[in-house]
Length: 397
Image (spheres, helix red, strand yellow):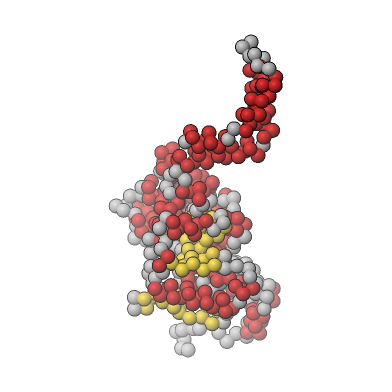
């Protein structure tokens, strides 16, 4: 080693190793006392004191609006028109991040990818409402209830009117179109679909977004055999083959694979002679593997797990969209759905329905024109209760 170069050992996501029951970081205690080479560790949380006391501890606080703007300027240095909006975009993200109901559901990667998307698709140096809407839905999806507030915040700070027409158009953009847009964008992040009962998998095939010939689906579970090293190696081999062929991999309940795929999900690619490579690691072994430009990863997770269980650093590595069966319903289907829901409510709560029926019956019997006997009135009420209300709802639609 000459004076111009030095050797540095970089331990990225070193905090993850501390969660292992085997405590692999204990080997660092002696090595950090008198290190022969420089060691730099990056972690999302503090390590234990035995390691912290053997190194210089630097804490990076949350970036300010000025920090966000400076980083964004480095991304869009060639776009003068977008540079004028970076201050407003940084302020918008800072407000959204501080006020999000699900803490750290949105993170820095979402903001940086928003800037990159606007930079790639800016046409004629004009930031249009359509481009802004698509960029926000793509990069800040996953919380449909929060989307109107997020869009209003970005539009108002950038100086664009967030009218009722824009809000209505944004609400009508199909989730399917956003998924297709992501899979067709070679510069986009991989995508995570939040669903219930794994319904998103069948929807992707039914809507012909994925084909069985070009897709490999990997299921995980809590069974001991699915947690073995052999099973993990087989799954990694399948992913490696798909990476080289440009096929799509769908991961379902595959939490034991995420640690191996961190570089892939981070898109830390190395390019050599026009070919992209990424490092796959398993235990102490790692290897650079070729990555086809058409290769995509789709992670399917339950809505509850994404909101309450998954780690924020993992969530921020993906574009997120909520996809359930309800997103396939047309306007007529929604009308029918509401009527069936009302019928089920009446069926499950017959007391409320019978009380309303008896009140209407008593009012009719008290009128001068009513000449029916109490027994016939009671019989009519029983017949009305037995009427198939769902048939009536179906016939009207």
